[in-house]
Length: 235
Image (cartoon, rainbow, N blue to C red):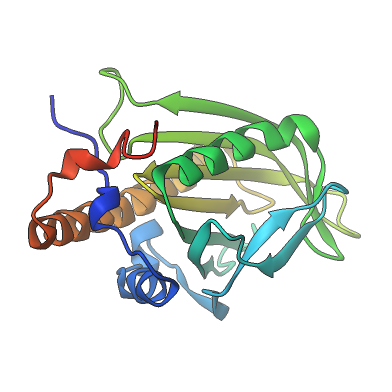
């Protein structure tokens, strides 16, 4: 069995400057997520802030937590071409200061739909009916991360009575997390929604593969094994 994609903690960025350079150096192209996507304006957000779900179930950008070194979000859109509306995809890479911190972030994310089944994205948009599922790495899974989770629900725009599907995926590679959101077109049928979701997950895999590749290079330079990521801070 192939080892999962990962990033050895001992070879990961150690400072905020290194982490910012790391996330900016990752290749993330619009066509990673399927045909027809282009960069959205604004395209990048970060790396000195990250999004946090407050106790009031409202998402806000806040200064990085003490255990987070950098976070960068890139946003894309597939414009409406057939009257079904646009599709929006965002991808966020977050570098934590340790594997333990990244694991805790995954655990918090897994619990958030239980705490906030309805979440306000901004003044006019929210998601509702959120459910989550975690998938620790085992022999039954494709080796694209150390562990991952998925959330599903409905995306609603104020004044629009037609909820649309919302997907949210998060993968962890050592101390780094990769999260993607998908806001589906309002008029899409089930086959198209499935295709959009699969393409978005494919885009996440492209990015996790790049992190794994960079991790192997950094680990080789540091003279450590790529297996050093897991368990480094468990004691």
